[in-house]
Image (cartoon, rainbow, N blue to C red; front, side, top):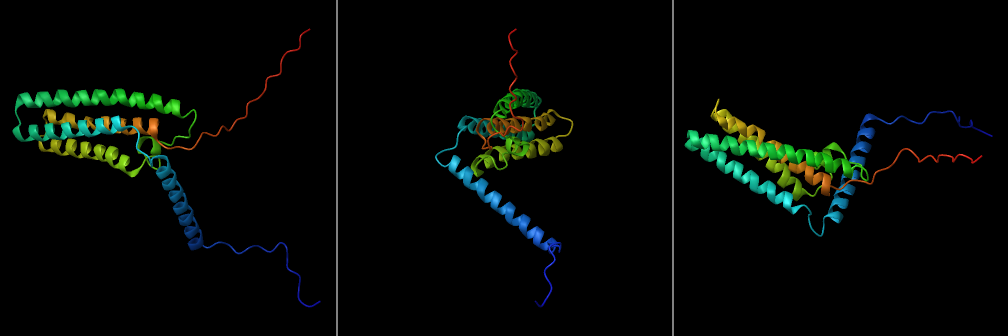
Length: 198
């Protein structure tokens, strides 16, 4: 027989960096497409949590209008009223934040929650929900920082506390309605042997 037999110990050609990067990008694209399809199937008939979305829109609109008016008019009475209003939103946000933590803890018993999906709705909510809730957080943050910078050392600085409410709404919606895979239990149940009766 001519030729040499192939060496079974011969090493397979190594994957180049470009091939590895292309493979990783393809896997990421496939994963994203699968998540988008799952979200479309889950929320195709309607988006739940409309009360949370409506509350987010209303509180954000009130905060923006009230803050802009006070920044323009700038009277002592209005500044005090705005400080009280912003403080009330902050306290409400703290309460809803605790509620979101509780709901998330309960939900985690049956679903694998991720921090990005829970609080920032990444891969767990449809685009319309993300736009509403995360957009509200962005608006609250920008308005609070800009107006506080314009009126330095005034009660307008209380506005920087308001995004706590927006983030709490995100966490609450994610904990209650976000799409997460079912939880996988790593540990198997161990049967405890019964004691024999003497």
